[in-house]
Length: 228
Image (cartoon, rainbow, N blue to C red; front, side):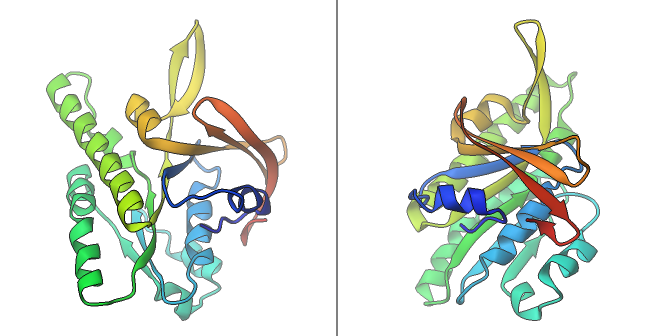
């Protein structure tokens, strides 16, 4: 997987990432969608295609055109899917293996990468404190989505990048920021990359963890052309 920043690519090039799900998360407006789109365009090489799930209300048409530099060749290699509710996302991902098997059967070009922006956006819209049974069902389906993505990654060597939202919980009398999805995310995610704002408007701090351990920190600039 080729990321938008040199520091991430330098680190990941030393590793075998044929197995594992990677997540990028952070607060609203820090550049998660920009990061996801740049990653998609960076990986549109050869004849490989990319599946890009976008779950938010306003499809980022202008941002896509700007980041792709209006290149039809790049855009043709990305298949955008826009589920409107969590059940649609669940059903589509659950049936992805049949798509890949059909492509292999017909000797078509294989997909290289799956990006989901965002994995928990629709999930959180349906959570309801007063409906515990429904919440259990949502958590079960979120777990199945991630399990299926992990299986696809391991079986078909298709890389997985998910964009996630930020959540907060109390730990030792302190409020800490965590990925939305709780223990389900912690179980399935191999590496997570948090994007933070800094004192400078056009700079972001990246913190990458494996489990709880911080393994990389760096600053990147965010411009109209994306991360540099």
